[in-house]
Image 1 (tube, rainbow, N blue to C red):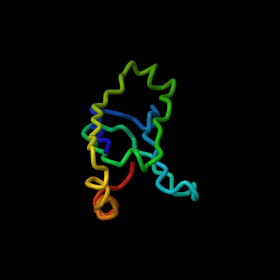
Image 2 (spheres, rainbow, N blue to C red):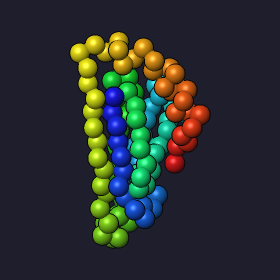
Image 3 (cartoon, rainbow, N blue to C red):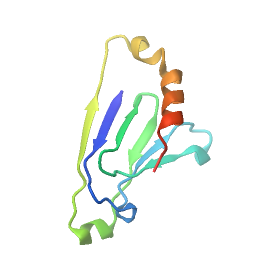
Length: 100
């Protein structure tokens, strides 16, 4: 599991740097972009979720701001232990946490 906490106060979407998740590779309309705004916490199964971090833009460089993130990876010897409730986890996240 990947846990990401963004620490970027006053982040503007024009700076880019989004986390892009591809929940269903067959349907590109399901791509989810998360802006790295301050105090945003994102959790996902990185071994099942294709993802990437999009480039920041020239506007970020002009603003002289920095993009700060804390990332933690949780591992286990028994992956079944983590994944047995992944569908419940996805349902909870979709219900309570909206992208952007």
